[in-house]
Each structure stands twice: as C-alpha cells, then as structure tokens.
Image (cartoon, rainbow, N blue to C red):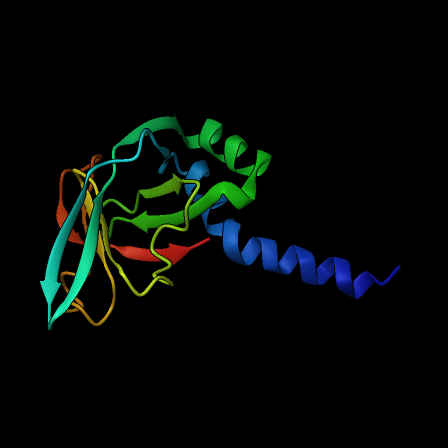
Length: 146
C-alpha cells in the first residue's frame, strides 16, 4: 500500500469539500435539490439560439445534516454558491452537471434566487448572481464546482 496515495486522496477530498465542512461547523451550509425539470426559455445572441433552464429548487437540509448528506454521496453535489456578505454556502444536488456548460446549445441555468450564464455570453458581473435566501442580499456569488 502506498501511503502517498492515501494522503493525496485525502488532500483532493479536503480541497473540494473541506470548505463545506468548515461552513457546516459555522452553521452556514444549506443543501438544495432540483425538484422537477423546470421550464426552458430560448433566446438569441449573435445569430445563435441558447436555452435558459429555469429550475425549481427545494431545501433538503441545513448545517450538520447537510454535511452528512454530502458525505453520504459526494458525487451528487454539483455546485456551491457562496454569498459574499453572510458567507453562507448553498450547495446544489442535481442529476445533470449544473454550471458545466459542455453542450454548445446550453446558455443559462436559473432559479428564483440564482442565475448562472455561460461565460462569454454576458458580462462577468451578471454571469453568476445570487439572491441569498439567508441574508436577502443580491450580488455576484463565489462559485465552486464540486
């Protein structure tokens, strides 16, 4: 057994999820899941048609319970948006890769309180806005892909 491999795996896990564990300790972690597929709007930019998927999100757990659910299935967590005012981390679970705009036709993901626009389609200030459900502040969020 190679001890370096175990250390490396722990390092990678802590690099992705250590921040969320810390936020759970500060009681600043929420876990959200996509309820049902939402409506799809289409819009045109530069002669190309992009899709805007409007998602309906449901609160699954908060703080320590949210951390336990993330530990149970870490691959289900797709995205974390952190409010820059209250530092609350909002983690999203979905069957599809939220925010990983690999499909050329994909344009934006949005819900009633966050919006992610494919980079290059809009200014960087409007590409990832968050209406934080905790402190009700609307601003650009810190974004982490998990």
